[in-house]
Length: 256
Image (cartoon, rainbow, N blue to C red; front, side):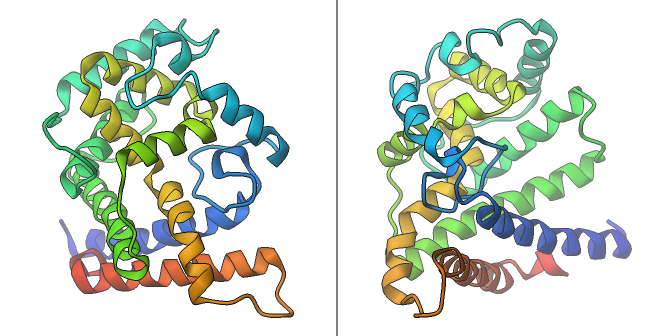
């Protein structure tokens, strides 16, 4: 990779993290993120009061096992054979390790590449192959940093059951775009673990945030002149700064 490309990629990595941090504040009241908890949202959502209904409706649709065609794609979504073919081709052409148990850098990287290949087939990804590898590597390390920082700062311990319950209650799959639901459907047909690893790749950030927020509230008290929104924003910035510091210490190559 040329020196200029490395500079651009490092700057892009910083921007990506900053945008993911900002997203959580901008989507505090959206249903994918919980009624009162800021999360990193994958897509746009409705008003807060719809969250509870989405959560209850999704209880029968998302479990710790891959769900069926109707619940992933929706009643009117299983009609795009071309997108289904793209998803199947992307899964077939991407090296995926079904034996990986739980969220790991390796699984994040593989599923980031899967998304890259999928978007590339649909003409939505203009990155070259080496750039796709670098972007997937950054994404994997950044996601892993969320978990590592949560463990170090708050004693967070990942639970797949709790994660699946979170995805279920927040209705992430139902609210996501058609392409994502179709890819998840193909993965659920292919392998249970691959399906779960893709869910972790997609929704790990908001799950970690919801899990660590109570601990952060204990560490940083709300100031008397601080609104609830300002307080949550400050807590999220504290987490973001810790994640940035972790990346700088453990993966300095990303910023070089």
